[in-house]
Image (cartoon, rainbow, N blue to C red; front, top):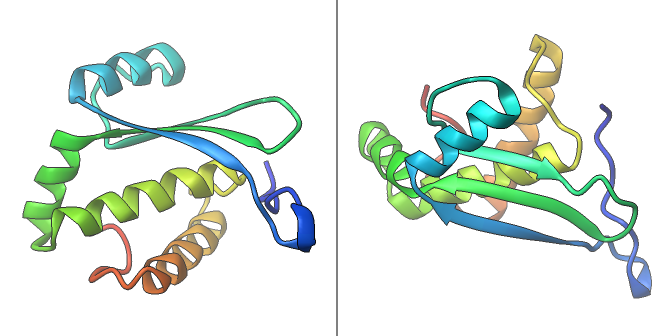
Length: 126
């Protein structure tokens, strides 16, 4: 899939809506198993709406996993949450990290967005 711009809004600026759900490992594990075939918890999953229009889809985040990753990375929990939201939204926009070239492009977009929100991190610590 190719990255897509946000749908235009009045005034010509990009726009769109999405849902962000912060939940626990059990929910992310179930979704990961049911939709990706991986029976393990994960930090973030994105589900595109699949419908034309301004609704982009859903981003699901595991708060316990985010907290553990922030602690392991030595940065604030809020910055880990920012990273996961940005990561999930980029997936909704068509970015992926399944090849080295696509990963480089996604990580660059992620770092730029994290700088924009003044996060103390530039990307995943793993």
